[in-house]
Length: 148
Image (cartoon, rainbow, N blue to C red; front, side, top):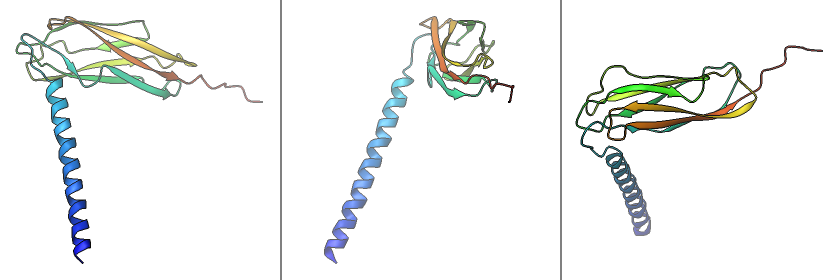
């Protein structure tokens, strides 16, 4: 009986310790990402979106989510896709310190049959004024409409 109780206590202690370590890692990672800057700043949840493999003519819309980690409003003056197949959208109004924003991007999935890697370049008033975001994936080739 004593061995069962001791074993149960070790299991509980092990689970508690491992959960505490994971939580502390998450807090450290989050606080490192949101380090404050003097002026306007941008911290993205991710700077690369992987579409994976998508069907021809499927929905090509995705979103990059960011936070202004500065102490001044963030103003995005331009967002430019690397080609006509990549169309970005961005907030026209200033993003307050600590507020979140979204950069939308739509990739033209009618261009199928090969992998793609495209970029969106942002021009802002942030401490680092130009930011490049990346989208990548593979659009399947269009299905043949002729059947024999």
